[in-house]
Length: 118
Image 1 (tube, helix red, strand yellow):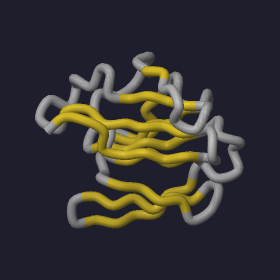
Image 2 (tube, rainbow, N blue to C red):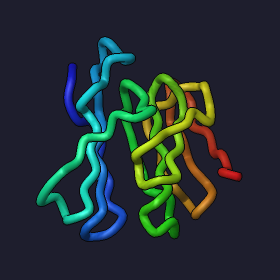
Image 3 (tube, rainbow, N blue to C red):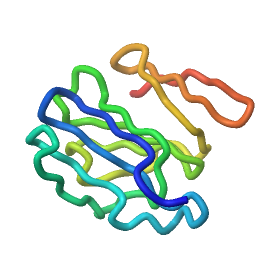
Image 4 (cartoon, rainbow, N blue to C red):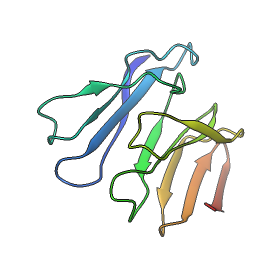
């Protein structure tokens, strides 16, 4: 139950992959990486990264700098293209989709919610 579970590209060059270990969610080292050359090369990110991530998305209109990621461990936010992360919400979800630059739909266990980023 380990590996990459989600990927997103802001444009043809800037992308991110994230995953982890579903059974040991705190242990996710070396399961997250970013690219700035369309996937030709990837750089591992391990600084302040949550252990397990099930879905990641670039914030629309952020020029590839801001990302939101979610897992059963909470909702996480990065303002530096995925290099560092902060937890912004403790409740866990499985997936997310943007419906605008600040509006996110989250799906979880028997639940779908809409939140707004500040």
